[in-house]
Image 1 (spheres, helix red, strand yellow):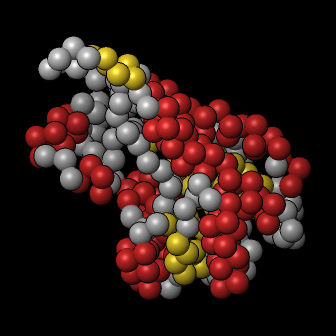
Image 2: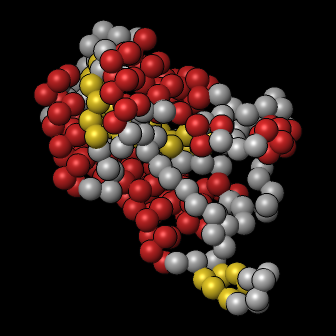
Length: 261
């Protein structure tokens, strides 16, 4: 699908990091971008910068997502592109022993559930609602293409580290549903792909001490640096614009394979 002037697009988690880089890349091609995010200040500022629209959306809420798509479609029309970048993480062992008093505690199930609700079910919620809208559109080429969807998983979905049980499970779920969803939508001309980022220089990581950032960068085989959000955006654009790209889960990680810790 060629991204051109006025192509409607939605980017979840679009106010910062990977999502913001993708929103800018889409807008640079002329797309009309709706940014779904919880951060109103950053979301409104980016929307103004790229000539898009901001929609305050919590992806765990049917009502929020429905309202977000309604606002985006009122402004730009039915989206042909959806990029899912909304996500969270935590670091809690399944069960652990206190070094202070030897007491034992387990991972709160509510905390595990919350990560699944945002990263996995939230992603699916946006896919399902967007795909239903895309199906109402006329095809744009001789192959019958109607739309393209890009999701964000993580290398942790394949080699999660200590404390990443919830995060890894959520991202493995995104990886695992990519091909079935692509098959569900194949007769409707809607392609679905997923990116598995490695260690990227996002706002979350920017808060880490420099020695931690340096150690993470040194752990990457090549190039020995953190990934840049613009590199994620470039791959997302390739997935969107290459019509034969479908049903794939692609690592973008400098060749890293995560150690246990």
